[in-house]
Amino acid sequence: MDVMKNFAAGGVGGICTVFIGQPFDTVKVRLQTMPRPLPGQPPIFTGALDCVKQTIAKEGFFALYRGMAAPIVGVAPIFAIFFGGCAVGKRIQGKAPGEELKFTENFIAGGIAGVFTTVVMTPGERIKCILQVQGASMGKEGAVQYKGPIDVVKKLYKEGGIRSIYRGTAATLLRDIPASGAYLSVYELLKKKFGGSEGTLSPGATLAAGGFAGIANWAVCIPADVMKSRLQTAPEGAYPNGIRSVFVEIMRDEGPRGFFKGFVPVMLRAFPANAACFMGLELTLSFFKYLGI
Ligand SMILES: CC(=O)O[C@H](CC(=O)[O-])C[N+](C)(C)C
Image 1 (cartoon, helix red, strand yellow):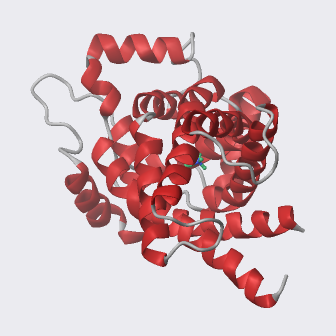
Image 2: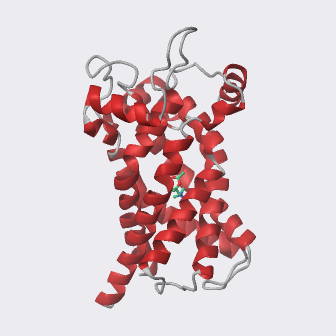
């Protein structure tokens, strides 16, 4: 019953994250994957705001919500797997359910959960990123190759089988192990600091703890996220050595700054999206309690 409740509450939290965070995420992916300008030519987007303005002007407001179906469908299992994985991570470290963990122990538990979520996260991110960038460098018409998530899956499968659908697995692990560690440990730390145990945090404290957990999540993983987005949206064969080829290309063409593309929209999204997530999660758990489930 407890697993079911957390699964459902995690799903609601995840859906809240996607609704609040998707426009920021689209801008992030478009900035991360725009082609480098030719010498003497301006970049396609000069920054996050310019990307928002151009996207709305050329493709309409809902282009910012493009690719949302895949994360919505993927988010409930991701959060279920994430919280289940955290429990496994705690048990691996010899902790009983409900036992208090140190910051580092929570970090390790979150990191272990990050390994589990990769199974669902990698194809979900691949589909989402492909849909988010289509149309970014051209106009409204002509650039749309994929009709939706199912169409992406079909075409990727035809092109390169399961391997193609799972392209970016190493980059996703590199991103999500430290990110998930930071996410869980910072949320638990702030929960303790704000004086709340399960279900007793005030709405303000829940929003703050969730928001800062989101900031911590992204603060540690932006470079891996940039490499993942590049790899997952590139044409077949563009990076023969996977993430290593992406790393070499970014260092050669853009230097270390290239690993921080999309930083602004990521950070702008991180706080509200994850505050909404934990609020949705805690409200749903409270609702179950009210119903006596
Ligand atoms: C990378 C990612 O999706 O992080 C999640 C938070 C967010 O901003 O979406 C956290 N987690 C991977 C632990 C579910």
